[in-house]
Length: 572
Image 1 (cartoon, one colour):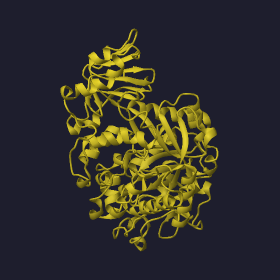
Image 2: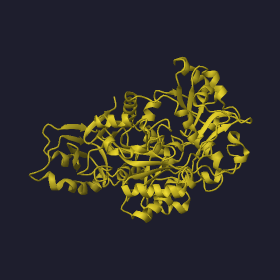
Image 3: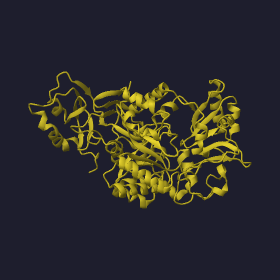
Image 4: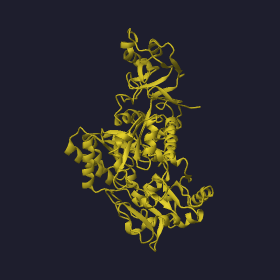
């Protein structure tokens, strides 16, 4: 039986009652201060009716009668009225500061062409002071005909302001001439290592910069103050609470935004269980020193015990994701020329250097989270983990390979033996430009059959978790991911499938978002399931995701969120 497959309540009531029998009828039975009654409670043993909580802890799970047998004078009673109570969810890959900041940025219509983007930039510039930076996103490279995406289009929209627009993957930027001038980027500027400046036929920069070349301009934009950082973190974490997310990993903590995150957590504002991964290496922007400061910066519900390594870019029209086999012929030719048609992308850290880095972090007990989109990058990550295990043994942390847009079958088979986790990004695989156009055009139809191979990941017997990569995706809504993991279709379970053989069950999807997330964060003894002795990280839903029509799961509404027994969100 799968963890969340569902025997009827009558069939499991006796077993559930036994969970509390040792306490409910004893003289020292715990006194409950909150009772959840008359519900549809999803537990590892089946469906229960009721849960009792004292302080942070779950003290009883069973029938209404079982739970009411506990001393509960003065307890708050939550009448579920048949609604579903389940464990809270974990998002293992978000960018908290960037997501909050994104809510205040210059927003572009998803998949828009040049005219619509220019109109949006013009409107943002109309509200800005002269010389003030216009920062926003996101754009989709595949939406532009050859030669149309140039700095001149942004120059006309905002002649008096530097403009910096992120792409849909946050791996490329599109800027205007004023921004290039402030950064000192000219036709004579060489491509930095691990980056590329797109150029026209005359060798002039087009205004599009890829991977580490984006830093040439980004470093010139003004850094936000601490109060602005705190406001962004609050906005993003509050939004996650509204979706039932009780734990998350901030996947790219940098020097420019760590102070706000740390301050908010230490002040008690951050309710979720949070892990931060400090960026190290060529994409760190001077953040490596935060690893030595991790104990001082940790506090409240935040701990910085993770290091982030960017191994490649993305396998879109930019073709910066590191692939084992060449990209499809003609892919992205409009962006940077036919001469690059057979390239295999960019591996940002050489293998020998990567092995040494991972071995050192593993020895310190620091989890390594890899950005690895192409199958060449996932192989590099697996090889580095193997080197660390060979040097240090298997007692170190469970490292995490993130994104995994493509993974070679041979590397999937190595996962369980090396004891690491696969972190997939299922929020973006329904037909959108990044999937059905950008990635498909770059890699070809055959490789698209194994896009985000999550079925194979589960079958590899490794730990599988999920991360949204918000704000790379426009919404952090985990119910979109749970539905599309099962349907492999657009929300609503309609239209063509993307990698149909990689479908999983609802029970498996919920396990990924609950038990598996808690396990990777080292919290499985305290969270991830509804069981006596665990902390009361609970969510109340308007429907049962295990029985609702498949195409309606993405519309699931979280009515209440509890973390450690405290109600931290209630839908008005």
